[in-house]
Image 1 (cartoon, rainbow, N blue to C red):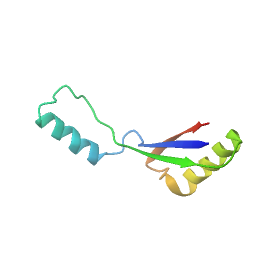
Image 2 (cartoon, rainbow, N blue to C red):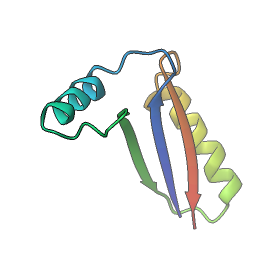
Image 3 (cartoon, one colour):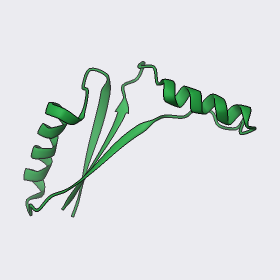
Length: 80
């Protein structure tokens, strides 16, 4: 079973990497790009068969290590 964790910055947190890339796209002629957001993704492969147990474990991993909850939001998808 796999867990996909998508991490984004919370609203109001400055995203300099996305801001720089957006400005570069605009200067290269892609003026139709309105906004750009940078995301991180982790993909965990685990040898558990219990979807709920995996979700709980991955949530704990996020809170302990993978996500800075002061600045970032996260979403977990469990893939069977």
